[in-house]
Length: 298
Image 1 (cartoon, helix red, strand yellow):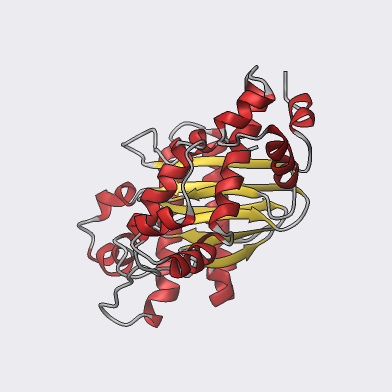
Image 2 (image 1 turned 45 degrees about the vertical axis):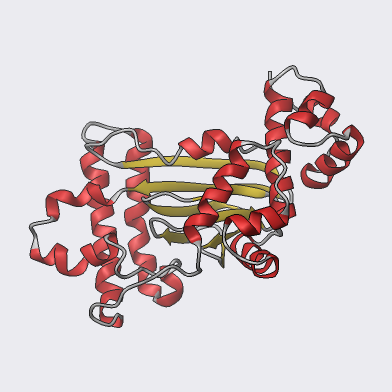
């Protein structure tokens, strides 16, 4: 189960002196195409290490499939979302890294030459490095070692994790820097990204708010046709499908964590008709709301 509001806060990093954080995502009994990572963004890099199951992640409108053992590098500032590709459990570790972690290297000319261009967003690593160069498979032990340190937290684990993460960035830069043109910049993959971010934030903040496709298109400064096309490319879902998915995820959370009636929950997520709510919930969650409530823990 995903709690959209709680996950939105997960992009915060607790310790400013060591700005990185581990999130171990364990999504049980997923349906095919069920959301395992809500659409969001943050200024930090995100490293995803797949553990179990198969998923597709849409990153700035481009889809990337991933299975056990694969690692994805998500640049800061990009919109990204994930869905299960099959029924069953999907497990992945996510390491969020702020570029400030490496500020003590800023006077190192080699760091400035090789690593800084990526941290500053002037160039990007491939999202799936090993697909571009198989030698990157040898580097993945660095992210796994860093994760192990963050899980076990022995004395000075922060320093060990930091050194592993910097080594990973450096090895990736060594591999891909020669392929880049000097001074090459990377812009947004699609227009109006900031307005899309504001729209998504609005949808997730108020599940009951009714926003038509026409109103949403106007918010991001596109006509309805181009908006629908861009939204589907961005999320892999139509606007209506995505909004309904957010609402049903919020409903799932309320069914499991509150004593509100099903009719009250339906109203909380913008469904005035309880029968329609039941139909929609079963479509997205594979069970009725009553069954969802019976499955709650505690």
